[in-house]
Image (cartoon, rainbow, N blue to C red; front, side, top):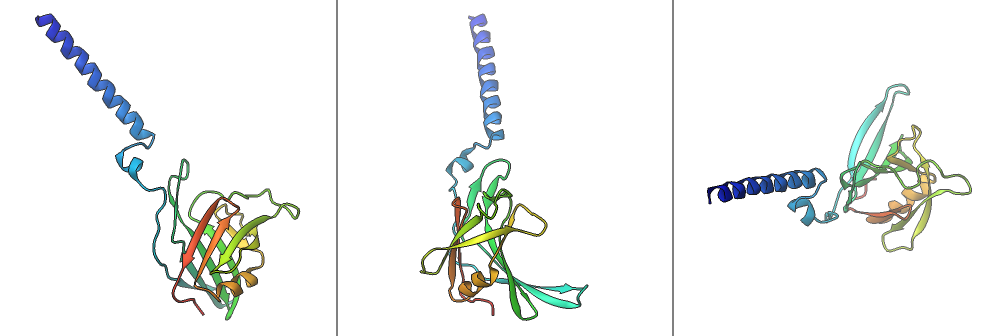
Length: 185
């Protein structure tokens, strides 16, 4: 009887060790109770424009950057783990709107470098309740993977100034929504 009891304890011990090893392995893969039950995206109700004043020391001028973060986010997998937000950045230089950019926090846009005149990188944009419009995007001057510049920034900004919300569809992959109460002037 004593041998049976000792054998039972040894088997129980290895069983518990096996369960612990499997639990650690699953945790390392990103599976646990909180991630399993977590929503795939997060939605906020409203956002506001942030303003940043910058000095161009070379030209002895200042410019302003107006930025707004998307209301919704998406969960990305390795290697860009976590919630992914987007932002719209507008640049005003010497009182004139000069450029508009669409940025993601991390990751790479679906149309990274392989777009050409015959195969442009196109984002679909819906301003307020209007119909969807196409905008050709271009790489940032330093080819940063997370930034795309609106090729016709003036047209984008003109449309943006008329509404209090916009949805941007990044190359058919994700839709990012922006809403605000007060547009910068």
